[in-house]
Amino acid sequence: MSFTEFKLNARAKVKPVVLSLDRLGMTPLGVSITGLVITAFSGLIIARGSLFFGALVFLIGSAFDMLDGDLARLQGTVSARGAFLDSCFDRLGEAFLFAGLTWYFANRPFGADATALVLITGTVVGSLTTSYVRARAEGVGETCTVGFFQRTERVILLTIALLLGRWAVVPVLWFLMFATLGTTVQRIVHVAAKLPGPVAADPIMGEPGSGTATEPEQPGEDQA
Image (tube, rainbow, N blue to C red; front, top):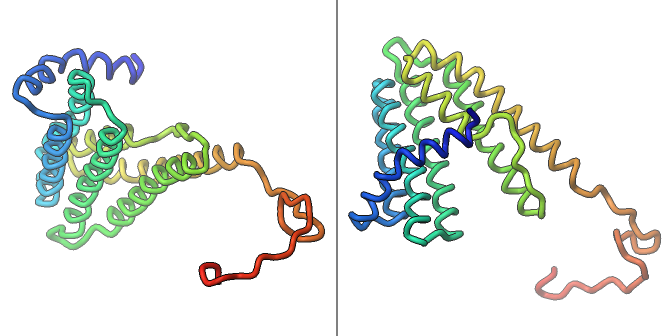
């Protein structure tokens, strides 16, 4: 079963929950904020050392990410603003998860786990740059949906590790660090290959793309 089929089956199963939220008068934004608050609470639980319980709470908060979109479609309130906020809340939820892990490994009874902290830092850097490369690509008119390890895969794998216990977290962090940084490199190469290269400069003015010589514009107050 593909991940898309899995999501469709999951949405079919949670449809009664979506209908209940609609009857209760919940809005998609309200559901998104509720999910964000729950994921923030999960980060606090993880920071205090309860990895298994924190992972369960994080899963509950993450479930709202699926509910808000379905509720918006049910209520006919799908919008670009909603999609933007949902994406931002997703990243904040992931940040709460890593913040909780950072606090947990920095305050171990027998001293901070330096290896785990380095791995978390590397994974966060990879996560940030993976998202940034896509956003920057879209800013210059290109699409960038490639990537062998994106946010969904990161969150699922890390949550499974938390459910299994501390012994599984560090090996997973090793994998996540290299996978996220590798995805960043993959996206950079993909987008750079699609963008046009340098344009030959005009031999007279030295300006790319200029066909005729013109007097250089004198800087005014707004240009100086």
